[in-house]
Amino acid sequence: MSASHRFLHRFAALLSSAALAFGLSCASAMPAFAEATVPCQLTDDQREAYEADGTLDQRLARAEELGHDQPSEELIARARQRESGVSPQENSVPSNWAGGMPTEGEAHVIALYVDFPAGENEPAYTFEEGDTLEALDALIDGGSGTFPYEDLASYYYRSSYGALEISGDAYAYTAQHPRSYYEGYAYDADNGLFVEALRALDESIDYTDYDGDQDGYIDAVYLHFAGPNYGWMSMWWSQEFKVERDDLSFDGVGLSNCVMLHSPSNDPAGYSTIIHETGHALGLPDYYNAMAQMQYGAWPTGIIGSDIMMDNVGDHNGFSKWLLGWLDEDQVTRVVASSEGIDVTQGEKTLDHIEPAEDGASEVTLDLGRFVTDAAEDTGGIIVVSNADEGIFSDYYVLQYDGFGGNQSLYVNEDGGD
Image (cartoon, rainbow, N blue to C red; front, side):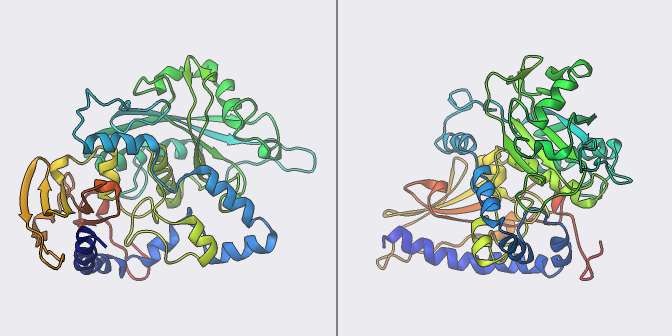
């Protein structure tokens, strides 16, 4: 083991105790809330049921197909270039890759409210009372939910520190066929439900209005469907995916980011779910491990602590915000180990340099107090511990402290009440 890796293991152990102290102060207050609002993760009971009905392998294959186990390649490429000091003007990766939802500026999205007619031996599927077109529209920017999930726009404006402004509209549509008709190819670019609805609504919608970053693609299309969901990673379940067809367009703009929504729009889970799935549209991964859940059960997998991409609770973590370009480099403290010692930097400033110890176990002390903030418009930043070879994309350890501000301004009593 190299000196740099020996240092990393020792330093990570020191920071782990601090990180756990922060995490435990929140975890004791939040289990009931987290358990009630995690529609994206597989539970032990679901896994047993899917093993019994023979659908487990099919559901796992869908999880692998979606590819939400790591950040998008485009997001990583842009972050690597920032890390290497490439300016935005020199950046060869577009600021908003083709078909991607913008991470900065304005995003204009479409929400489809879709019900289904009856078919032979199949009932019509309509929405439950309260799950209305107006409720779906309010999910985007209506402010009718409970803080900090009052709507998609408000959440992401805070999470991005004002860098991303989301707006949009909801449109009602009754499918041409019974719901079972779409189960074989709901995502198909020629016959799928998204394409059918968008083509049918073409006369009443100018789709160029929903290309906020003007990259030639609708920023995102959400489809809230009537009728029951079929459980984790089935077709009728909340999920984000991309349509990859260059020859498909509406008013000259293409279709790429598509999101299925199964949770009722007037339910708290509807708000947290659309926020989570939008994270995928931005290029972020799930921070739980679906494969491990399949094999070992629901817990423990993923990161330590809550995150909107882990258990649909709280804010995006600092690493995600750095990937998305929402954290400036001076808000990232890097502790980099090499054979020449340890360097502590922040942006372009070098804060400290520690010469290598003879036994290879050099230590560095950081004042964690300066990372504490309760300001909703600010962040304490993140500390990234890594070796010098690959930077933040090597084996690394990230420490983050979140104050009681912004999207982290939530508290849940032990009985699960707000």
